[in-house]
Length: 97
Ligand code: SF4
Ligand SMILES: [Zn+2]
Image 1 (cartoon, rainbow, N blue to C red):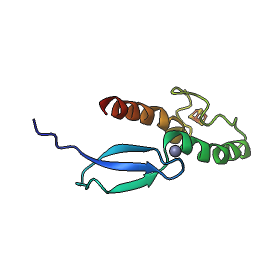
Image 2 (image 1 turned 135 degrees about the horizontal axis):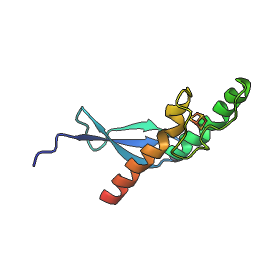
Image 3 (image 1 turned 180 degrees about the horizontal axis):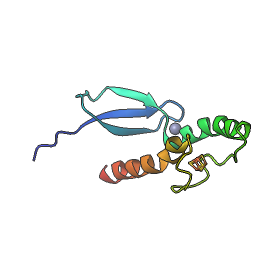
Image 4 (image 1 turned 90 degrees about the horizontal axis):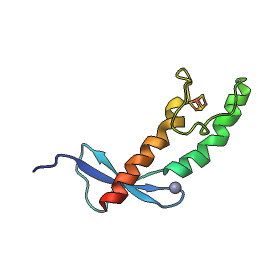
């Protein structure tokens, strides 16, 4: 079976952890892109968002809700809940290896 999905290596610029993401373009084995892994992303972004939330008169709840939050209007929602999903992806990749 032909698998049309192409993978690009991604390396965390903070801790050096590597994973793969699907892309539309073909990449060689030596190509990679820099990003932040889930835990580093959370580490870097949380204090910044917490400050913003407090300044806006809200709770500093960013990153503390796990994978469920009923505040659908929250402008940080995508980031806040993002790594739970990304974490599952990483688990899938780890199992496949
Ligand atoms: S989605 Fe928004 S309201 Fe919900 S926990 Fe995250 S930051 Fe807080
Ligand atoms: Zn990292």
